Amino acid sequence: MDPKAVKSELVLILDYGSQYTHLITRRIRSLSVFSLCISGTSSLKSITDLNPKVVILSGGPHSVHTPDSPSFPAGFVEWAEANGVFVLGVCYGLQLIVQRLGGEVRVGEKQEYGRMEIEVEINSGLFGSKKVGDKQVVWMSHGDEVAKLPDAFEVVGRSQQGSVAAIESPIRRFYGLQYHPEVTHSPEGMETLRYFLFDICKVSAGWSMENVLDEEIKVIKSTVGTEDHVICALSGGVDSTVAATLVHKAIGDRLHCIFVDNGLLRYKERERVMETFERDLHLPVTCVDATDQFLSELKGVVDPEKKRKIIGKEFISIFDAFAHDLEKKLGRKPSYLVQGTLYPDVIESCPPPGSGRTHSHTIKSHHNVGGLPKDMKLKLIEPLKLLFKDEVRQLGRILDVPQGFLKRHPFPGPGLAVRVLGDVTTGNALDVLRQVDEIFIQSIKDAGLYDEIWQAFAVFLPVRSVGVQGDQRTHSHVVALRAVTSQDGMTADWYYFEHKFLDDVSRKICNSVRGVNRVVQDITSKPPSTIEWE
Ligand code: XMP
Image (cartoon, rainbow, N blue to C red; front, side, top):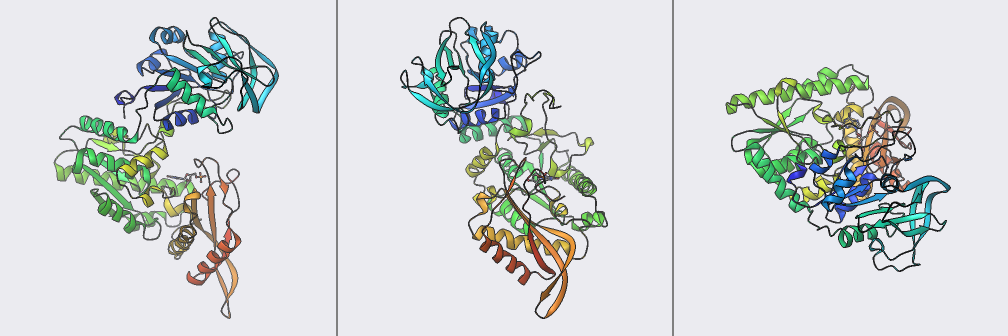
């Protein structure tokens, strides 16, 4: 989706590396206002091209005194003032405003980290109907403080320690908060953002998933035209499914999808996923059973990275063959490829100094198809690239993607290959794992826990242990259960099941899956572990 195609007024966030920056974007979108985030060091042209009504300068780990600390470009203040653009600085953003507009920032005598109380010093639109002397709790995290305000500014709020907590210059349309209104630890922060956007900036609330859907369909129709064909690899996950459903709504059966059964899917996954694609979503999908091809290439391979590479390569060859078959059938090459890229994958961010990261515009390669053949020369359609995961789920709901499907836990592209440790073709490891996994997941669903767990699955361990089943001594497999809570998969905590639940699951597994006599639970967070075992 082209940001310029979105009709709503834009609140642009300039990112200076705070861990909360994306939260600001999401909070603003939750107020039905369109918001985008770009690097705080973007050029003036990239900012003005987007034509924002409001610009928010985020927090960040820097000090304005450090040489090369990131800042907005020359000409930004003049452009904002000349064009009636409102600017709000948050934490480091406030200090940037003060310093760049001619005030002074100094190293704070008292640093302010965590929960603080602030008091209204002057009636301000930022605090709505609050009166002078009213207090509120906020979350602060700063070492520098304002020593002198720029011309035409006033202090409108002060911390319990006496330092500047909020400033404004209604004439110049510049505002600043020394605390983080976007975090839940600032309980009235959302109210302040609301006052700022609606009362001060008079932004109109026009961002909704219904509008996104309409805009997106128009954009796809005009991009693809009336002749061209589009292909899409469906992984069975939420993103590729919603992206394909959207494109299908726009161009109908000129969309051609492929779903590959690589023999590494979960219990009855192919049947279940294909049923949703065909019965519920009416998507034109070619299902390719490539089990033998994948498993024969994976035979004897134990190194996890080698497994991933082999799987990626096989996906490419199948995808390539699909595109060539289509070309023969249609008499023309497909021109576009749909990808379910999400906003967090394309966000430009301003990394903290020393992090080794650059201000690059990164787009993740699609794990699930393992990359694409270079000679295909397909142009990309990425209809979800301005959306967060929860927005994709909302869009999916509007598109009638079944609720159960939208809430599915993430599943890695290489599938069960990274959950059977070692050689996946050993004995009946994959079948055993499928049965164990199904019992575990079904028990989680029956207990009503599925939605509060980020991801749950079983792992087949390449070890046998001694057991006794009936009167017989057994020497059978050990399986591990893994369930984690997480926000984004970057960090994770293991999930605390009740003992009774674990006891029931363990009994069910050992009583119904042949070849398993021991069940263990993985109780490691990420870090130090990863979510998957390989
Ligand atoms: P880790 O194991 O790195 O996993 O903590 C984080 C999230 O990423 C998923 N994952 C993958 N997804 N291809 C994928 O498409 C992969 O190779 C891959 N490896 C891990 C994992 O399931 C979790 O959600």
